[in-house]
Image (cartoon, one colour):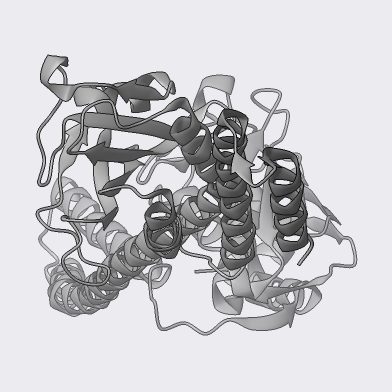
Length: 462
């Protein structure tokens, strides 16, 4: 209302000062022209105000560019107009809205044109960020003819900061049609819509990235689920294979051992050398049986059907003491244990973990020295850290990592019985609980310290 009142007052003032004695003077023509120019400016500012209000309701780049061509361009008396937006990933300008011959139906573009950045008049404006007026396109080598092309052209960049978002381009069939005033108007339109357009494009880009990320996550999840299913089948097959092999191998070994004992007991004419050979064979079959039993235990670590529970490590230690009662009594081992916390995980595996390590501490004792084993712990928010320290034969520095390799035996085979799977078995159990295990020793006959950590929360165990 204020702008319209201003126009009325301005019109009255011009009439009062330009009409003398009922005759229109030459000055009146000049004043009328100035009045019309000012009136056009004010009317366009009115249009911009309405457009600014409309922009507040729009949140997509498509709505914004069509609002420019549908609500602004016709007010300028232009023959046609096309708005290009930049596609940064492809380094291209793509026609996104149009007015005039290229717009045969609402929100439709006839034969949409795509340009490279730097190509043609529009491409150069997008590249430099500098608006241009081409007085006569017939004299402009970079001009690219499009549907409804004219003899003059104006192109204005839509810029936020130093980033060009797109270009407003208009052509007219009349040469020298576009003026500096037209350039000023289009620049105001570009400036007014730039921030809103930038926000819309950013939002759309983020939504597209989110959509692509969700698709990628879905693909990876499906792939992971398939891999997990394959792994479960593989683990099931491994467990079944281990049991089959155990049955198929242990039975013949029992038969061999039985016949060896029969021969040794029944055949009185056997020489001492023959008896010694049979003893080697018998010992070999017993060792193979132990290896098979060890492999069966090893396969249990990978059993996906085990259930996670919360349990008390003090109860685990009580069970281990019962299982190793004969070893402890025979070796006169002294075991000191801190009061332990509760954790979540696979209780049967943790039982085997403690039992293997403590059994090793007793087995690998120094001659004529009773084993002393000290078990302590500390914890933080995620892990329980266990330390099992003994006064046994110790380990040489070079053997600390080698000790975790399957079938590795670091001490004499005749002096210490075993299969070489114990610590490798322990490492797999600890890894199943998302932890780590490592050894410390100052050398031979200086004892060994086994350290390991176990995740406290079962929800993080896979």
